[in-house]
Structure formats: structure tokens, C-alpha cells
Amino acid sequence: MSKPLLQIALDQTSLAEALEVAAVAAPHVDIIEAGTILCLSEGKTAVETLRQRYPKHIIVADYKTADAGSTLADIAFTAGADWFTVMCAASLATIEKAHEVAVARGKEVQIELFGNWTLDDAKAWVKMGVKQAIYHRSRDAQASGQTWGEKDLQLLRALSDLGLELSITGGIVPEEVGIFKDINAKCFIAGRALANPQTGPATAKAFHEAFARYWG
Image (cartoon, rainbow, N blue to C red; front, side, top):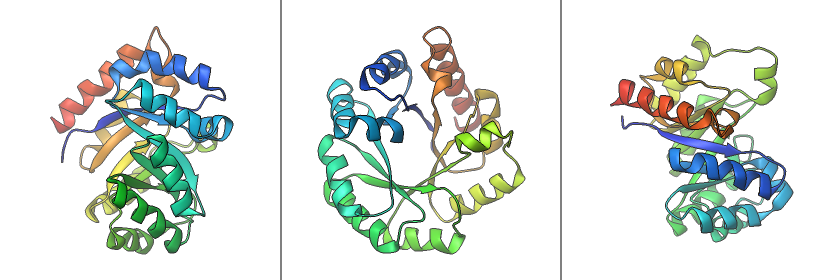
């Protein structure tokens, strides 16, 4: 398994605020995500602007798509996204249409694992050629005090065994990274932990040091 990448999630409500955070984080991360909140607030301009400012970074359009897969994928990829998110609850037809557009553009679809899904669903995604999934605790789960447990790790291992590359997120700190060491982690995603201009660079450094320690 290769060493994971580090991703900053920009979930601000205005593009100006998001760009301030991106300027702090960009030198220390591999991937910049136009978060769902930002995309809903600013539209495709958020992705276009990030692409223009950070041509060497991977750009994610976190649309959390549930329908109109080909149309929304085309909008996101035309705007400059490299990766595009689709909800696990979307129909196989929606996922397949988005994936077809991604393949045609040399891009990738990521399946957002929210709510109810099964390993049989995951097998179907892999069969159609999808390579990535995102596993996380939601903001609401974090706020209610839920922590990473063995159930999460078992599911992550099972998804990893299917061949999926996993992005992992949900209030993760560098000290927790080691619990995922036997999982095919594509990247770890953080938001507020990387956004602070005083502490963000040091936190990013700690993440990268942990990646080298466990996947080096």
C-alpha cells in the first residue's frame, strides 16, 4: 500500500473565506476539496477558482451527487475537478453514468459512504470500475461523541480487501492515524485542523510524519 495523501476540506460558505484557508493549507497538503457547503454556496466557480490557483494539486468537487450523475460529473470535471463525489444511496445507473464521464475525462468518482450501504453494494461499484470510496464520521456523529471503533475498522478492512482506495475523515488527528495502518488509505481528510494559520502547518507536518511512520 502506498503512503496516504493529505486533503484539506474547504467547507466555508463564501469563496473568499475558502481561499484564505486554502492559502494557509496548500503548501502542506496534496488535495484541495471544494466542500459541499462551498459548492452549494458558490457553484462551479469554487472549483474553477481552485483549479486556476492550484494547478498542481488534486481538486475534489464534493457534490455528494444522488441523481443526474453524468450531467453533474460533466459540470465538475469541466470546471477542473480531478475527483467527484457520488452518494452511496444513488442508483447504480447514476453511479455508472458519473463513472463513464470520469473515465472519458481521465478522472475518478468517489463513493460517499453515508447512511445505509452494504458490502454487496461495494462489490457492484468495484465491478463497474469505481476505484475510490470515502468513509467518515459525519459532523453530527462527531458532535454526539462517536469515536472510531472496531466496527469502523472491520468495514474499512473489508472495503480495502475489495480493492477500494479509501479516503478517511471525521475529526481525525495525527495521533489516530496508526489505527488505520493495515487499510488501503488513499488519503486522510481534515478541515478545521489544517485551517488555522498558527497551528495548521504543524498539524499537516504531523500527519505526513505519521503517514511515513506507518506506510513509509
